[in-house]
Length: 351
Image (cartoon, rainbow, N blue to C red; front, side, top):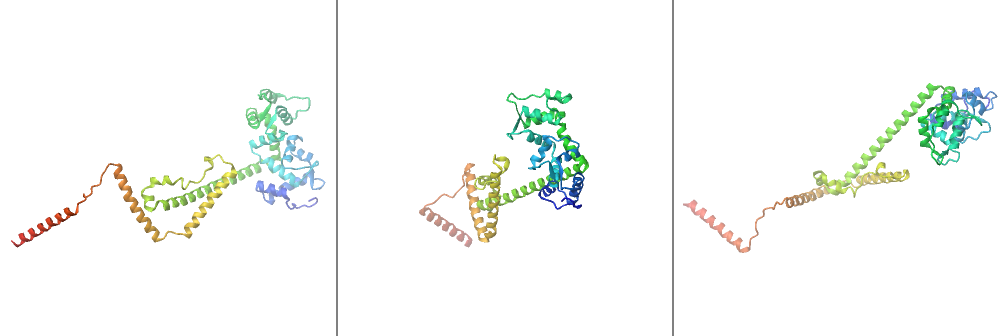
């Protein structure tokens, strides 16, 4: 990498930076030119002090935190891959992510909170307060107004609230990011890059949502097909209010909001649902409805329709009129009377 004029082949860190910021080799070339200006001796790496000098900042625990975050173990120098990855990650932090980064750097024990001493160290580093010195001006007034709990523990939500109430305390944290943007590529380039990445993120979220809706609709179609097969064609369409009775037998698709499950459990449920939907689809392909099956369903539905009509009549108190049963002797008497009427009609015609 030392004396080559052209952009070197990207290593793993450069590739990660390109993937994060969606950059091409032209953008990498612009970063390489900046790096070469700092690498005056053409060693293939630059001093960390020169890195800070380029952004007009003093070296601090906060600034070195980006190297810790990216697992960069340097001995006073950094390579081009470490250089570009540090800048990309730091400059792409959103407003709240900068506060989270501050919290990460000064939470030495990484136990989810900072103590009052660590918070004071954080503010002293931001405002370049040396040992034996104190904050001055507005930062001092803001610091004196802070209310810390009795146990001395400050969680991230507390830090966020403090930053919103006293923005002057946290201004230096954003100043380093702004200076990096100005020194490398310019604020306009970073603004467009952030907007481009946000558009990509929104598009992915939209496609994900559309895919979920499509899967939900597909699953519901297969579920309704099972219910229709179980109920019968006519009953399914003529008695739609009865479909709810089959929800337990054929449950609806599991929704994330309806269950307090972990991501792994939800992924497993979705996988099982997809397998079940695929199995049902394969069954429909292997065993399509035949004409005989449809005729059977029709006959079954006719019987069911008659049964429903009788039940409805009983519920409404309507008794169907039926012809009273007769004995064998009554039937013979009726036949004789019918024969006598027939003979009388013939006699009358002859007369």
